[in-house]
Length: 217
Image 1 (tube, one colour):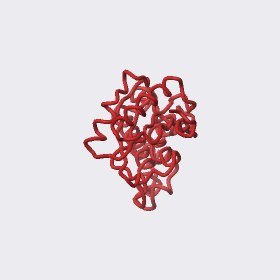
Image 2 (cartoon, one colour; image 1 turned 30 degrees about the vertical axis):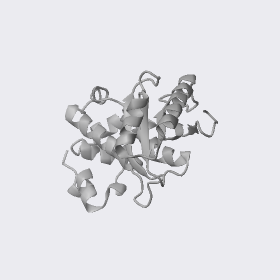
Image 3 (cartoon, one colour; image 1 turned 180 degrees about the vertical axis):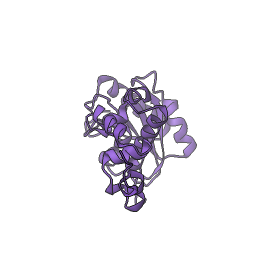
Image 4 (cartoon, helix red, strand yellow; image 1 turned 60 degrees about the vertical axis):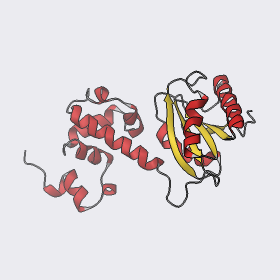
């Protein structure tokens, strides 16, 4: 069998046109060294879902015939970059005006995470984001999320206020009793320090819940 014409190869199509002109299989083939066969297999393995693929770990991708550790690493790195691109705020504004802004900023990072991640947004007096930080990974509880972990950076950054956020890997953003307890503890600590907690947003798959809108604390 003769090799396909250069114009038919994914790498060449990428150079001649743009990434948007390539199919998902062809884009994966670029990461797999140009061979569409293993690219098609790995896409089929995850039922055509890039989100499912992004949740996988390298050994799971390596079970696909033709996908070795190096290719698996390139695929996972590309998907991680895509998530970060989706989460990157527009340069026109970095202000947080509503819980929807928190979801728009952090949702792409957190919606597919396999573990709970607790993030804090540190805000200036105009509700602009000074910095965002992931403070903990694991089940959310009052022993894991200590006020000093939240407010130590706030003091160092001279933040005027903070917004808390974490994800539910189940996809259901309904707050748990532990979510409420942690929020109340941190809200009270913020009052004492003069750095108010403006909200705690629980992020699910395609939805979120604002504990401030729920009237918590």
